[in-house]
Image (cartoon, rainbow, N blue to C red; front, side, top):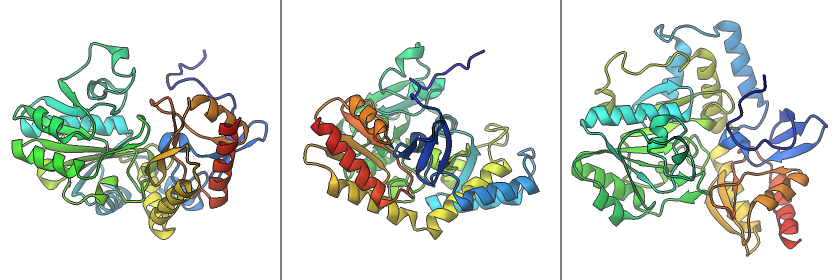
Length: 374
């Protein structure tokens, strides 16, 4: 039986292998991967540090019940919390699972049920996550919607203040809305959200599933704005650089509201996932990938033609065109550059590996200029 495909229209080629920031199809054609597998492949393909870590862990211990403490899980949790500047970590398998856990914790901790989320936001395709997702068709495809949610314009402080009262459990924000087209929160919005939440005793949840783990040139995107320390943060995608692993990060105060057994995951925090996580954090530090992500953004901004507006940060960028983006993405693919689109029909979305070489960035912009001139 054919597989049930739910992720969208398949690409017209079969990818067989990868090397660094390049992918190769079954016919041997090469593509510079500026989409990074939906913002996952931060280290590119077959990164030696990542391959070695998983191989060595597989030879030592591939899986054991999460009830059994393991040294690799202890190291993964400690390293992730230090990297993210959070107190506690709960390891799961996907960003949607992390967001589900964040919603559970916030509702229990506050004794409230309503969530205030952002227009244009995306938080996953599970039922609870669809309840706090306003973006595109995702929310309406599986009505009726789960949970109580209010949506406010992204970046509008006054609208947020008006929506948040003592019935609200949490405010949920992506620092940069990825699927919407790499739209960044205005300066001061996250810190204002922190103050608004404090005023009514609501939790602040930051969804950094796309923006986190170095992709924006910061360890987490919220680190760039003082005064917005969240209660709960979700991370995933780049966290395993291709191995499924995600996490809910908590302050100690939030962690103290959780009882043994109310959250769980069969595979969350498995040894192989923890080994992949540790390899990613090690590579970010040892190979200066935060600076490389910042340099990639600077190069794109410097080379982009005047007709193109660049949004986002680091290795999460939106190139806003003066025309529909989908035909341009097709033309770029024919030239050997794989890019994404977004819910903004004129926006190309770039989520490249931080190891993308500068000459590939130059080649992408050259190909983009040629496509726009045709």
